[in-house]
Each structure stands twice: as structure tokens, then as C-alpha cells.
Amino acid sequence: MNSAMQEVAEKQGQVIGQLSHCEAAIGRLYERYGEAFPSMRDQWLSLADQEKTHASLLRGLQAALPPGQLLFNLERFSTFRIAAILRYIEGRMQGVESWEPLPVEALSVALNLENTLIEADFYGIVRCDAPEFKYVAARLAADTRRHAAELDRMMFSHGKTDARVSA
Image (cartoon, rainbow, N blue to C red; front, side, top):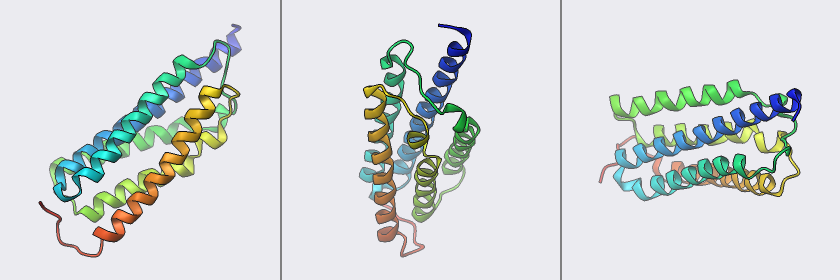
């Protein structure tokens, strides 16, 4: 592999690694929300499990891409945006520990995260002919849209009151 292709392959690994780390961090945040809001625990833990699956799919993607099979349009994707999302998630996880957010606040944070990932459109911007990439990209894009819709439904049903949701 020549140096230019090696550079692209390294960037590809960094981007996929950041996306995997982001999905795992979102899963940890959702687990904390499940602990904080027992009446919504099952919903939060289901979302957390799905985010962990996304992280695993992304980790597997890097290994599954055939040698020399590269992602295209990586230069159009901002790794700074993913880094900012990761910092945001860290702040929210610390927030859960230092103060007790309202359920509607947690739902708002989660919906904002999912919508930010939708808007980043990594899987629409970055292209690859490998079937492994196409599968993972289609699944994660669809799941993220589904998560946003589910969080929107949860917000509608729980966001009508300022009362804290307890057991």
C-alpha cells in the first residue's frame, strides 16, 4: 500500500474508532438514565444495548473491510464534530451524577444526540463499495432515526409534567 493509501487507511481507522467510541459513550449515558429513572428503565436499557451493538458493529467493520478497501469522502466528514459530541456526552454523564435531572431533560439530551448523529450524516457522506460497510451504514442510519422517533414518543408521554419520575 503506498503512503497516500496508508494515510487514508489510518484516517479511516480513526474515524471509525471515534464513531464506535461515540456509540459506546451514548450507551453508557443511556444506562445511567435507566438507573436515574426507574419507571423508564427498560426503555433506557434497551436503547443502551442497541448503542453498544452499534459500537460493536463499527469495531467489526474495520476488521471486516478487505485490505485496500477504503472509505471515500472521509475528508468531508468532521472528526471535530464527533470529538465535540463525545465531550458533550461526558458532560451529561457528569451531570447525572452531580444533580438529578428531570426525565424530560434526559430525553431532550438523548433526542439531541440522536438528531446530531442524523444531521452529521456520516453514512450518507462516506461511501464504500464493500458490502460490510453498506450493511453497517444502512443499519446504523435506520436505527438512529428509529431511536430519535422512540425518544420523541417517550418525551411526549413523559414530558407533559415537570414532576420527577420515580419508581
